[in-house]
Length: 361
Length: 274
Image (cartoon, rainbow over all chains, first blue to last red; front, top):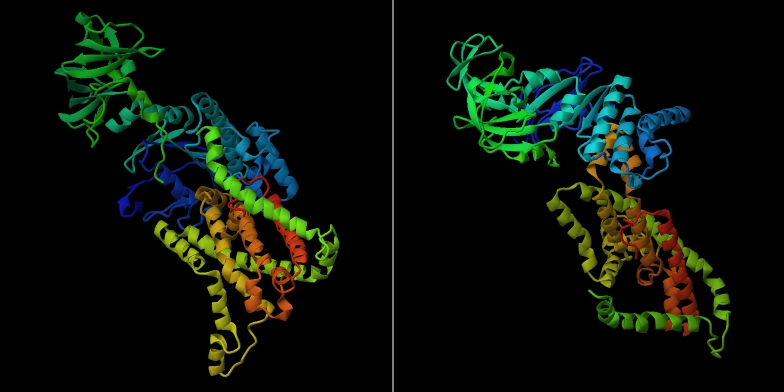
């Protein structure tokens, strides 16, 4: 896919299974909304094909596709009330009045908006508008529902509620959901399959657990959760060397002496007294996070993030132990060296994904 | 700004409004309700209005026709301009505005030159062996004059409403199964209602009270209420009747705008209503 000669999507090859909750996850500008718009029919790809039930639908206009969309910021019709917004697609399809009535009421029930039929759109809160938008799309019983950052405009509490709600609706209707978000937590908790995208390319496709536990490259490791990413050398199967020390690991299939990226999740690291550690470092920072402390520990000039429930004062010297299953090995990629170093760590890393964004429009 | 300062600063215009709007209105009412000969209170002028009802009716019909034609001609143009790129929009907007910068009288006179029996159109037709056709002094010519002069008043409010319609609503309608025609009928047209109403009002109001257009382009059977009023003051020498007619016209305009606004419902974005 190209815009004004600029390549937005490159080599996207995706399969969507029936009844699946699939999430396109990535930072803003990564091409996830573009992908969604191609599926919805609002953009025609400059090359490649979109296939639906075995038929190529590249040139099929949106109104002929059995796909409905929940738009970013909803795009509800301001001249229609709640009922007529939801009934819109059914009226266009010229269904009998009583069927429209039955299905709209059913939908109002599902999204808990009974009694709001004749309210104008302007008088609804963000969460209510969100639910009208979902109802308006779902009432058409599409084969596929596209959701473009549907929860981005809601506050945290409401967002959590709606996540559960969406998941429940998806299970009960069996409709395939294709969900776009830049919020990794949302993606992991809701999806059957997560597609991590960056720079218009798919970085990894997999179940949420696999994406988290077996990230393919430094970008995925860093974008999904927190990661310490180190340079290492794969000596042989199950043996990796970093920080001048050889560790046992559970990965195999690399070339002998291949340089690799080593991922260690902050919550997997065991803290031990300095004399028992595989590595010994100095605590240089500590932040209380509620569930745990985030501590920054310096090992030979390289700073790691470690999550622990115990307090360690700044300046104290601690040792760490790494079990073989805590060490994950990745091939080197274009992202190597860009992520996973906490030298410039500050509390801001949490907020990076919170920025409200206007993307790809 | 303090409220006192605002009052102080707006005093000049408030005075102006009193002197040249309210007082004259009172004078019009006074004249309308007094006998021309004796100056005593009288409802005679209002009773006499009866014989001008056909003229009033004709004015309304012509103006409604002009407003309707303006809507049919203007909507596609406004819609087209709203779809153009930024630069083209500005240019086209200016071109629509441009005739309004030319004197109204001159524009109407130009049509006389075009339409009259020895005018440009008939001369050309004559060269082709057709005609001469009777173009001027017809109801058609009067309505043409109204449409020509007031079309920008239709296009501009329509454009300003259509250009604000959210693109995503159109995509949402397509997503929900609308083809092009349905998108227009179910989303774009309903959302342009405020622009349509304000455009209709802005064409209808000046049309219904015009006299110059009908004098220059019309004949003896296309007299409008504006002509009658003018005649009462200039030739008929019956300012009292003229005042009564003006009053009726004013009420008519109020009623029309009132109806239009009612149709617009509670949409505050109703563009400009004069």
